Length: 341
Image (cartoon, rainbow, N blue to C red; front, side):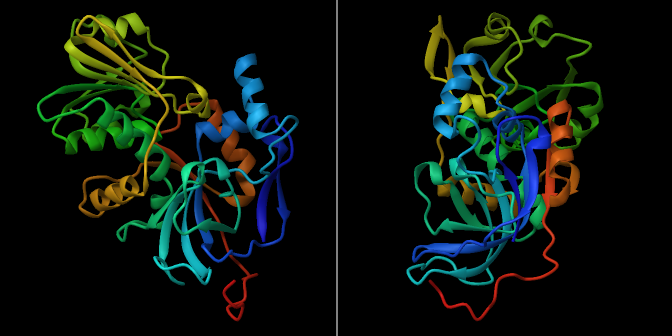
């Protein structure tokens, strides 16, 4: 099968298209033909290892000293099940699914094996939203799960004023729509070229950060969700109402390694921490999508063969929503006569 292999840490040029052995599902696994995956800021951070020294050392210890132990990167996908192991009960051949692969990675390929019920760092798996294409569905898991986790942590409720800083990326675009579903009034902050898009997915107000600092407008919010983490912490706290909550999320991989918790400044709380979610959360997002409450925003689409160029584009910053990778299957390497393993 075709796969993008990352043999060492570095620029997008370290990503190589190769032919590798197709995986065979274990008894509790399913084999998925991947039709679409994505390039996220986290993928670029991992590949480039552009982190402060201490965090870089931790990442090398966790993922590999000179290069990633798991050579195939990629954390989210959508595709069709080709075969299932003999103990699999929840899925069958032909089911269309979408998944978050967690630290197992592996989505930059034609095929992947995932456990029927992944645990811990192995990711999450669910039936694909019926109304979405593979490309649209592949862009849901990471941004959707991050957004859902943080808005729930912030206890976002109907009638509250919520500001999302860095609203134009994969997390922010879904966070806007989730917040509107929860009944909040949403102010979205991002660059000039994204403002029309932010309005189109439900933002009530938009702020161009290149023209105005939201922490100095005099407006106050019940919740501030800082996706990008570049605004002044004290400024954000100052822009909260009494009993307000400040939520911090980093769209890249580094957030996964940082400690967290809840701290208080008077009646205001700052909630920072690692993200946790389960299969039921992915199913919840699927149901909202099928109810017409959430859609994904796709900036650009690249074929698998142009993965390095897709990484360069994401790494430059400024993408609107998501960058999707399509996986063409011109010749099936999997044979339908293969028995279940």
